[in-house]
Amino acid sequence: MDPIESIMEIIEGKPKSKGKPKRKWREIEQLKEKMALEKEIEFYNGSFDHLLEEVN
Image (cartoon, rainbow, N blue to C red):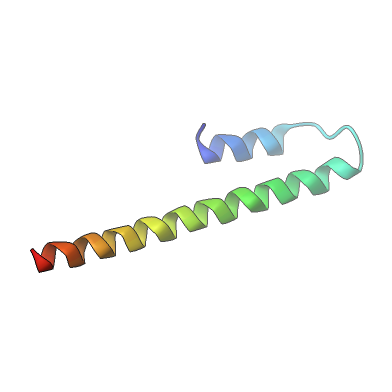
């Protein structure tokens, strides 16, 4: 599932109790952190690949 779709499902869901919105916002924050980490990993993977190409 696409991360953006996951966020949209969380946002569009209807809360059943007062405690749910806080939990949903925590889930959204966790997804945002995960996406940021994935972008950072992609950046560093590209940097290392470039260094490996220079060695060969």
